Image (tube, rainbow over all chains, first blue to last red; front, side):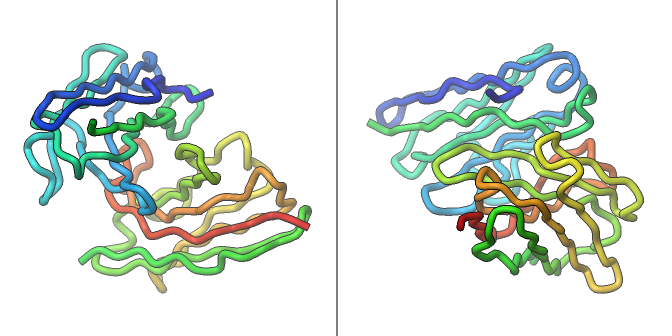
Length: 110
Length: 121
């Protein structure tokens, strides 16, 4: 059971907007930065969103992140077939003095 | 270009030991915290261990505390994970990761390609 809670799956048709939630607590999301990672099939994860909704070079602006209290969310607008992947949220947790991940959300493009 | 290249993954018997390494390049190694994250077959990501840029402070997941040791050689830009008393549940792809700052409270921005550790008799 992951410390951060994500829905196991999400789906949408091409062009739609998909939102993935990530729920935590005061010791992780509530007090620390949240990061989002994308893992395409058979590859290593890569950074998708970092604090204050910033994107690394090369990540399209269709991806956006937000945080409110002890929850965060990732939105994918204009869904494309190449967005089919697993998405993970992560944050440092002060109570366990370590990093915690969400269980991951598999996005399927219908 | 920032690169992380893991090596040393192998098939190990239960109770055995193994050291995996990560050669870093393309950034000022000493200025950034590093960590190991693993992924068991068909499962999600699990943080294993982290250490500060200087290597003086280390942090471990409860699942590996007392069995694994993270360390770094800043003169050789290399990160290590020494694993002992290995169990079947340690079977996973182990990713070397670079953190965004020297202190571990900030997240990961770069991932290696991973090295596979299989614990089986």
